[in-house]
Image (cartoon, rainbow, N blue to C red; front, top):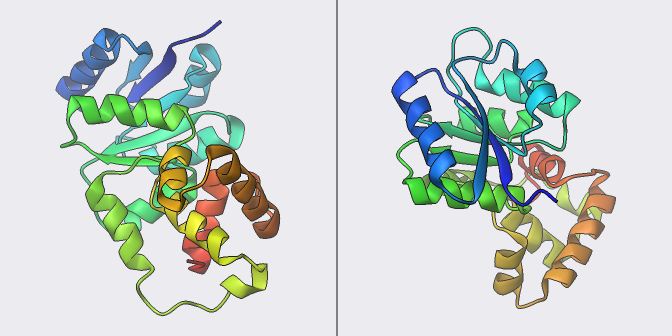
Length: 213
């Protein structure tokens, strides 16, 4: 039975790649399965190593981290991609989410924050650095496109969808709404059905693109 979370790293900065490799190896919670300076063989690497989580830089030679994320999610939708980057601008954030990334951390994050984010991601969360979560939430302060009622989402479902977009885990949503994790899952299943999506990342992308919350 696999207990450790299998982690692969894609980072073109040699020093940072080595640092992240060391962090994964000594964490005690994670299993290191490979580190690469570019994404030229990422699908072959995924087939060979079967990572649970990929730590992904955005700017790399050849294939960008965003394009590589799209390739991975198309062929291996079960693999979670955590962007680890210096970019804080909204376009990069949303491009990464649309490509299928389910977490977004800044490189200034501490070692503990990175380990916690990997663990949260592998357990169904969508971790984001505080600055990133704020930018996502700010996007929804503008006038809405008026599409949310077309999906007949309840106020509770809209609230939960907003928390998903903000990167909250099921436990955090449950605490926020004062409901059990089982009830959170039930609401999320209903959201998936109404939005005609099959995963959290699809729901988040649809919410962002159509400004549903």
